Amino acid sequence: MFKINENYLKLPGSYLFSTIAKKVAAYQESYPDKAGDIIRLGIGDVTLPIAPAIVEAIHRAAEDMGRAETFHGYAPDLGYAFLREVIAQKDYKDRGCPVEADEIFVSDGAKSDCGNIQEIFSGDCRIAVCDPVYPVYVDSNVMAGRTGEYDGAAGVWSNVIYMPVRQRMILSLSFPLSSRI
Image (cartoon, rainbow, N blue to C red; front, side, top):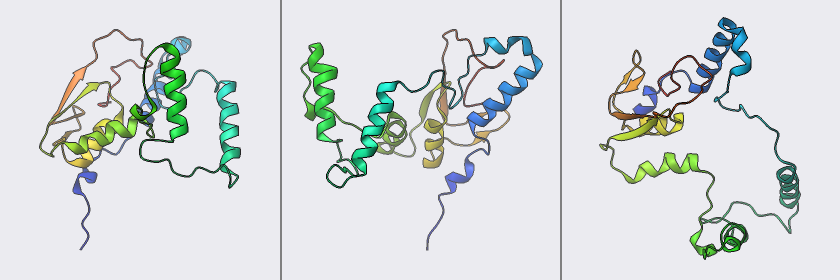
């Protein structure tokens, strides 16, 4: 018989970035004269369009994926060899660093790697996260059962060590940006 992972039921109902958007809107309404001073740190708050070289590369890649002779499909475990060779040459060797393509690993991104690396540790390990933290780093540990109980009033997990970032930052909110909003 199949059983649900009960740790999924521990996840709080609100997603951090929708909470940020609501709080930014409330701040703007309360302080309309400060709207120009807001530096947005929420998801999707980019400041510039994609660079033309990237747009061109995306178009070329889409064309390649639409033809049988240039279709790539899923990448091998270390990433495509042609990509690792270009990275080794352009990002390392051309700058005087003797890095070979077989030393390079291309994944689908740091976010999933950071979320997945926890799986090498036992479930009773405590975790520490910087505060602020990208939500998936805590949520993936909630789902793995490492975070203990959630204190909604304080916005913290009982088995998580929060390491506050002490650097002075200009934030788009009138309160500390963290996974505990």
